[in-house]
Image (tube, rainbow, N blue to C red):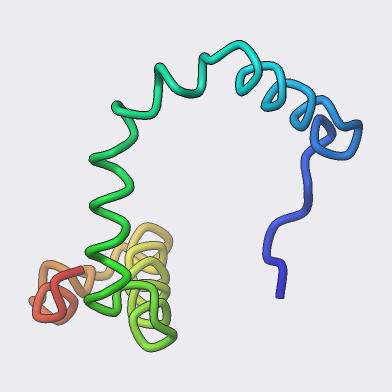
Length: 88
């Protein structure tokens, strides 16, 4: 299921052209080593289950509780130690 609508640039094909130009000019190859750390972090998170459905739900709850605190002024779950037990 898609959770974000495509941007105007994507719908017009501008993104695809920009990516093709970067790849053809070799700019992509120059930038590749700088992305290695981010790829490694994402790979580790994936293997640990960070992107699993239960973890996505727990992160959603953490955001919802934080927003509820902003609206109501009630002490957030993070400060009560509920969410920190999950490492979120």
